[in-house]
Image 1 (cartoon, one colour):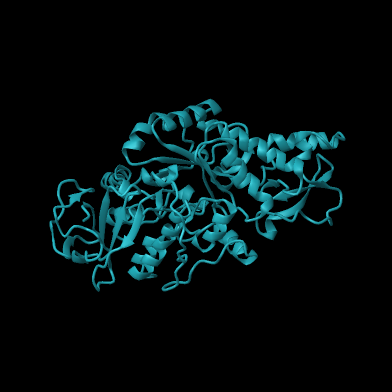
Image 2 (cartoon, one colour):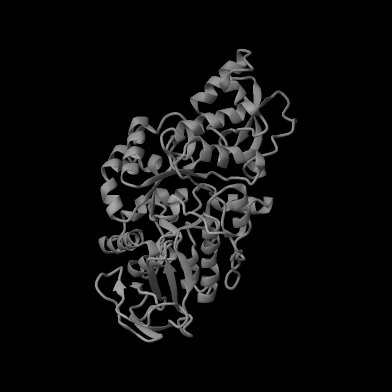
Length: 495
C-alpha cells in the first residue's frame, strides 16, 4: 500500500534509482522469497495474534474520531482488529491526501479534537483492538504555524528558539544540503524565506528535519512522544531510510517510550529488504513489495504473473517474518492516488464479489496481516461482498490456527496449476486448519494429498468459514469440490 499518494509512481522510481528500495520483480517467475534460516522459537507478539486492518483517510474524507469510536463494536464484529489513520495529526487535505503535517500537536478540525482521538484509542484498546498510523516525521508543511513562528523569530535575530532551531538555515544557497534527505534529490532544496530573510532547507512541502542537527531531531522526538502518550500502537513511517541516524526516531523511541507492542514499518519496505528491515528494528513489511494499492500476491497469481509454486515461494516471506518475531502485510487492492481519491474510482477484480473474498481468505488465511487500505472503498462494496469479506476476517480472528503466529506448510494438491492447499497449526499446537483454494473461474474438485501431513485420515472436519461440517476425510487422497474462485477453511484433527 503506497500511502504517499500524490507522486507515487515518480517517487517510487526515484527511490529505486537512489538504491533505497529494491525494484519490484518482473512479471512471471521471479520470487521475493527469503531463504529460510533456523531460528529459536520466539514468543509471539500482539500483532501476530490478530488480523484485519481498516485504514481511514481521516483528514481527506473528514471522518470524525467520535463517530469511529461509536462504530468500534461493529468494526470488531466485522473482523477488524487494527485501525489505521492517514494521518492522526492536523494535515493539509490538499497535499498527499491529508498526511502533510500542518500541526503535529492537534488533529484536523474536521476529525474533532485531540480528546476525541484519545477516547478513540482508549476505547479501541478496551475492545482488544489496535490503533496505528501512517506518519510523516521528516518535514513539516511550509504553511504550518510552527514554521511561521520560526521565520518571524529568525527575522528578529533569534537563533536558539525551539522553532528556529528545528529548521536548517543558511544565507548561502550554495551550501551543501543535509545528507539524509528522506526522498529523491528533486524533493530537497534551499528555499528562500522573505519573512526570515534567509534560506531554509525544504524537503517535500516544507522545512525538513535534519538528522545531523540535534535540535531538529529533538523536535521529532517531542511530537513522537506526544502521539505515543495517546496510546498509539505503531507507525508506518513516510518514506523511511535504513540509516542509523533515523533509527532512534523510527524504532528505538517508539519501542522504549511506551510499553505496548508496536507495529513499525516503512511505506517503502517489502520482502526484498526483509532481512535488512529486521536488522534495523522494523517488525513488519509488505509480503510482496511496495505496490500494495495495485498489486499483492493474490493479484499476481490470478493475473498469471506467478503460478502456485511462485505463490508458495512468496508465502515463505511470511514464514521468514514469523521466524524472527515479525509480520508481513498486504492489503486488498485499492488505487490511493489523489486522482482516484477525488473521483472515487477504485479498482476491482473481474469477479469482485468472489475474488476479493478469496483474496482475503488466501492472504489473511496464510498469516499475512491483511485488510482494507481505504474505508471509503470498503463502504462502497456491495452488502454481499462486505459480509463475506468480513466473515473471512472474523474466521481468522476466531481461530488460533489462522493467526499470523500459526505455522504454515504447503499441502500437495495435484497437477492443476490453479489450485493450492496449506496446513496452518496454532502456536500452542492445539488447533490445525486445512485450507484449500480453487483459483479457476469454474468449479473444480481439488484432491489434496494428506500423506505425511500429520492430519488424521479418518475424520469429519469442521467448516470454519461456512459453519457446520466439511467433506469427510476417508484417506490420504482428500477430494474437495469448490466453486469458481472458491476456498474452504477446515479445522482438522491430527494423529
